[in-house]
Picture: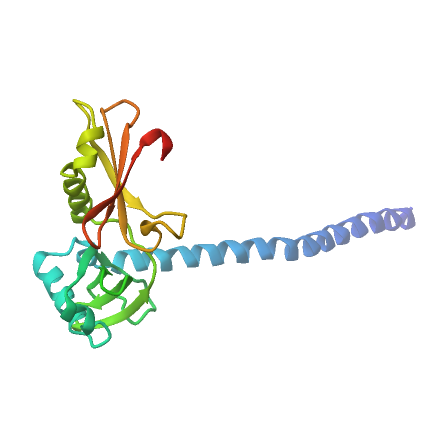
Length: 229
């Protein structure tokens, strides 16, 4: 009678052994998930730490004094000193710039200055380190930056005083917008010169007249019905 009992014990022992083996095989599959979760958890605090350590004052708008310092530093740089001597340029934008670690300028008060040089027909895009008082980056290209507020106002003033425009504008029509414009035809003056298009009409209706203003010589070069423009 004892022998059958031992025979029954073998299947039970075999099942117990299989259970351990299955658990052992399942463990490696769960390990990558745990490692991935741990890596994700450790990466998030590092990103949060960068945000916590960021100085809020670096994002603040530039003060008038900082803008003056940035422009002085840039115009005194020998690479663009010729532009400053001629004096035919306009400041398009001045804004704070913030860079992230591990960049060497991280934590510095920076100003981005964009200037259009009318004399050389070029764009100057610079980063000025206000803490060190140096031009940290300078890019000079033939690109056309957006119009500054001053350029928009100048273009509108020139357009509304032009006799050809006044003859075509009806009572109640006014300048609706001034936008940066360049022509597709190489024979057109606006193809290679900085220009603005001033659109006239009644607010809320279809525009009637478009006046193209050459911002280098401050003259209206073309007056066209809006439907043909």
